[in-house]
Image (cartoon, rainbow, N blue to C red):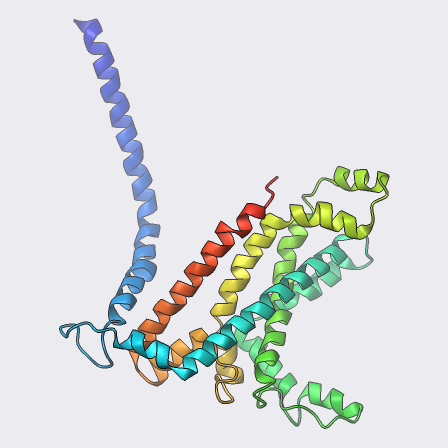
Length: 304
């Protein structure tokens, strides 16, 4: 009888220990889960719900699709979406290409490369507001550094932030300057993990530098490129600080971007319902981009 009870007792003890471990695990996760629900999941649900109500209406009123109908009729939104996708389409690839080029350079045998790495990384550690004010001085029409340099060669200067055809590209230049050095650090770390035997084998085969980069370096940098691409796209669609300091979306919405347009509607026009609908649109755009990145690009990633 005692022998027959032993397996049952052992199983009971084992089950109790497993339950204790699960409870312990959930208790460890509880603080992070509470923060995630309070500051991510709940605001998302509340925003989606708010988007179905009109300006100034109460929750007791009947939900409506009026905000989403207006999305299709909003000419400013069409301009903002065009600006946002153009901004991402230029800043993301240019930042990545520059980051790879800088990482390859400072990873080689170069005198003073430690100082050069610091110089490239310095813009990253500067606060966004400080960066915007620095570039505001660069772009000022009369006393700005860029127009002073143009004046040395007889050029009358450019209204960098006041010309609708130039303002958005001026923001792009500032973003690339700030982000390329940040992405360079990830590529530099990835380059230092590549097995040197691969390069020795390529040297024996007398492969050119371009062939080595195309066949060895870049494929092995693809996991890092995917990580950088995700971060760069997120940064491209969440720009607010620089716009607030430099252009406030002007002139005539020429430099307005989606998140700043949401900010305007919520805190300048106090139309939180339409701002909620715009936020839902932004979430949809980010979800589609995430599916493209992880559904298409990740298949080309070579993990070591």
